[in-house]
Length: 270
Image (cartoon, rainbow, N blue to C red):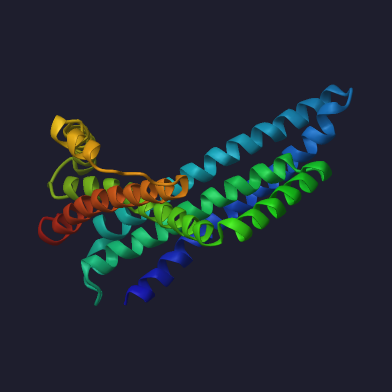
């Protein structure tokens, strides 16, 4: 059932995200054309047109990020917390499957959005010399990784992908948890959701600060000082990535439990 939910979610969201991506890439080409030619002409009208194309590119970048964010909230809110929730929650799918379908689809779009934004910057700055230099850099980087860091480079890319996915999951769940709590009330549901978002953020920041302070105790410092802990630069990077992934997983787990608990036990669709 999860596969069917994912298929439905991707179809529904692709109708919005794909056109937005295309608009961003087109404005990137327009901005490239304006910076390479239009802005260098002595004609005021063409200079204004070139400036507008560059502004359109900047606006398109912000629009892509905002749309992907709002779509993440809108799909969860509309499908599970509004009238459509009566139908969705009667499907032969558990609450966990419903939530995971939203999380996976939103995270995939977040990652694609990041890739498309970077691609748009490349397209905007692209010229022959830039392309030649980028190809040379990529060739050298590939040779270095293949020659010396074949395994470490592959592992690092996998870690980066896992971190991006885990971070996206954590980002979504902090909003889902607040919405689920807020919609357990009978009145002013959205206002309660906003309030609980800030309450949850304050609580998570407080717990995180306390944990950081606890790591600075003399006992832990003496324990770390007594260990012969020497690692190479690449090993330190892997350890750091592992810690970041673990933090995202713990952060996500807490908000996931809150989200599913309130959807199961206290959801008020009236």
